[in-house]
Length: 236
Figure: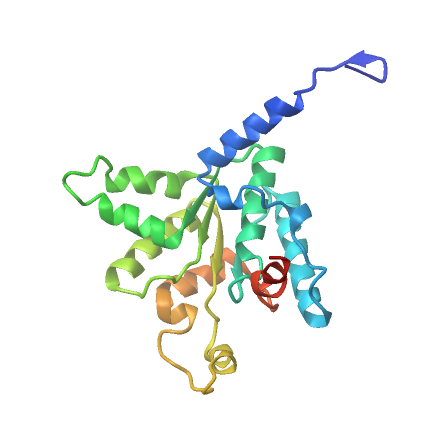
């Protein structure tokens, strides 16, 4: 094709789609989330403060992509299930791969821990180093649903090792969690108003991990209702 009197080669739409699909697979983005982009992040259903919170989260996600690779911190998305934390995280990865050609990787917290555990099995074809190497070395890694497992010494040690390594190597990490960040939030969510041990992010991942997250991630707290419950359930 020609542009302003000069010829240029443009990748056709079908080949671009094949590239994007391959990039999604290499980044381990689950099929369910491969359609998640900034343009499809719906905030129209929300009102007042909820809409402001969602709009702020969207702006911070877009700002992260715009400033990459010069951003100094990753992002920690906190909020109740269904507010769009995973959607925004995947959208960031897709934009970084498409615009900035960054190497990206997506892992759910539970899946990552399970793969590391499986590597200890003598009949497994994987090794711990083989599982961890991409998580440690990839430019941008997203860990979805941090704290989904109850904390044990092994879990805390494993997550601390991953985060410490990425922090020291100046690798950017995106984190999502459904857990509130402090006991006051737990009291507001709990019907009895009573704080229960194990209900905050710190309780689930340990104080060492939460302390490291303060240093390596900017907090993005999303205060909104469950999109799946409020919108999608009424479309069926």
